[in-house]
Amino acid sequence: MHSRTRRTPEQLRSYRYLGPDDLRSFGHRSRQKQSGFNTEEFAGKPVIGILNTWNDLISCHAHFKQRVEDIKRGVWQAGGFPVEIPVMGLSETFMKPTSMYYRNFLAMEAEEVLRTYPIDAAVLMSGCDKTTPALLMGAQSANVPAIVMPGGPMNRTSWRGEQLASGSDVWKFWAERGAGRMSCDAWCQLEDHIAASPGHCMTMGTASTMTALAEVLGMALPGSSSMPATHSGHARMASSTGRQAVDLAWYNIRPSEIMTEAAFRNAITVLMAIGGSTNAIVHLMAMAGRTGTPLTLAQFDQISARTPVLANLRPTGKYVMADFFEAGGLQALLAQIPDLLDLTALNVAGTSLGDAIKDAEIFDTDVIRTREAPVCATGSLAVLRGNLCPAGAVIKPAAAEANLLKHRGPAIVFRDYPDLKARIDDPSLGLTPGHVIVLQNAGPLGAPGIPEWGMLPIPKYLLQQGVRDMVRISDARMSGTSYGACVLHVSPESFVGGPLAFVRDGDLICLDVAQRTLTLEISDAEMDQRKADWKAPDAKFSRGYGKLYFDQTTQAHEGCDFRFLHADGSVDPEPGIY
Ligand code: FES
Image (cartoon, helix red, strand yellow):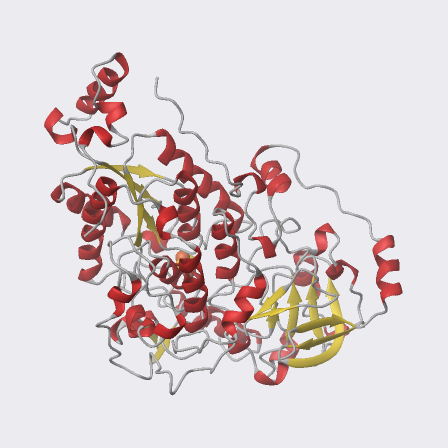
């Protein structure tokens, strides 16, 4: 399968811990025996580190206690030695201010765990939103052979005869409740149904987007990312992933050989074709920043302009991930766009992308559209420029009301999220559907953590009039399950003195998605004066992780990674084993 030579046991990284006849290796071997393993169970075998992001508060990974056993089964069968290593689980639901605040924390933890322990290859157990980019970023920087086990989406679920979509329907029904069209009892019943099995959100939200991109980047087994979490095939896929990790260890196939420039271009193309989450832009930026070939926002826009949206999945379309899987899954979609992909890109299975999709078929052409009948011809995501976002901003036109994609209206400004919560429903503000709602100080440093607040709420009194979308602008992100004419990731953010900080009530703002512009209609002289009058807020942290985050986090258009974790062309030496 691989053109390179299989390593000998003595060439494995773990051999230096477990093989030699010296004092330290004696200690390592004796402690393996303390754990109950005989010499022949571990000696001369690749050690496969299974980075498990399970905990009791990350319900999307509720099945990971069983899946880690499935992975171990595959590792043992292939002649490896599995070791489970718990790492931080980034629970999208429970972590405050946002799981994004801790993405780089998990990336650092994964990198250092892989570096310090005797690990020859890693299985990265990911699923819930930020776990996938975080683990991949860590594996990239450690550059130890690694493979992703995608956690899989939740099952289909329905309520009162209507198919539900986790995330997307929470926002939809909350709006109905705000409009007075849903009772308190019905809202409580919905709680019992909206997330009805283990697995990550079953829309094409951030979790499904990032696991699909992990597969396209070549870091997960072909066909693995669309598999529902509770399908028996998911356990079999986990076992196969464990087996493949042993192969990666023997042949020392590293992430840097798989996550190449071509692989990142493929990932951007697929992000557009699946109608994926805006969050993926930030994560791909961060991942590419760990390589020597960083991405630019312009690349996303260029690729968006030539790529059709083929996945008819919520929040852009109609269906959920279980439908996508049954319709042929990601491979069937990729097989529709071979001319837009670099089919020579390699994957962890030891094959090329072209090999992986050559026999793929679509079984339901309403769920996975053909090139002749796309969901949208192009333009899944768009990158905006203008005096309000000099370093860029992002919008998902496919998930917005079309009449808002060209819009000019007066701003109503909220200085931060508490201010928004306190005043948005105040009728005395007199908001109309033509207003532009602006939220400041919700970016990477201002919030902090660039939370998913970007689908700003529409005032109740407008909801009651039937309004369901308005132009909304912030330096926040938005959940991949969200929708609407929401301009996101405005960069630089307002907290560091980006122009969003200078917007005032009543200023006219012009959004023109076709022209890719976002303009604050004030003169340059007025902008300069407001900038001169602006007072920088105080730093939020003086110690701990917050201070590290605050000192090191880059802006949204750079991926929000820590500066000192970017690739700088140098290779860190592995720590000595003494
Ligand atoms: Fe985990 Fe949505 S809450 S993926």
